[in-house]
Image (cartoon, rainbow, N blue to C red; front, side):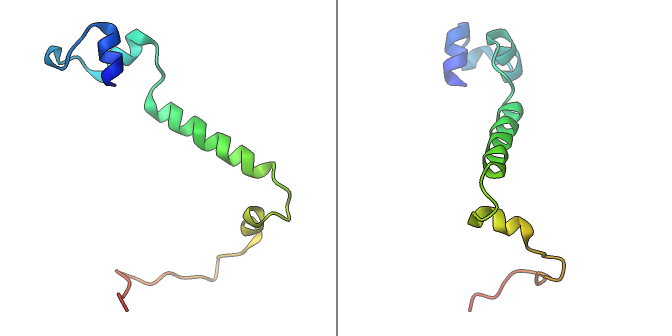
Length: 75
């Protein structure tokens, strides 16, 4: 964000909102970028063959597994 402020000619002292600066420079919001990278990763996994260890996890049934309540014991 520091670089964007510098590109627009603003400093921290000007107290401009990040959303305004991003809109002025034309940069997408952070949420969209994170969602984009997550979807790219899932598409990468779906292209893997079914025999791959990562894909075998999709076939497991976790319906009968229950997690313990509260913080786990240290020992």
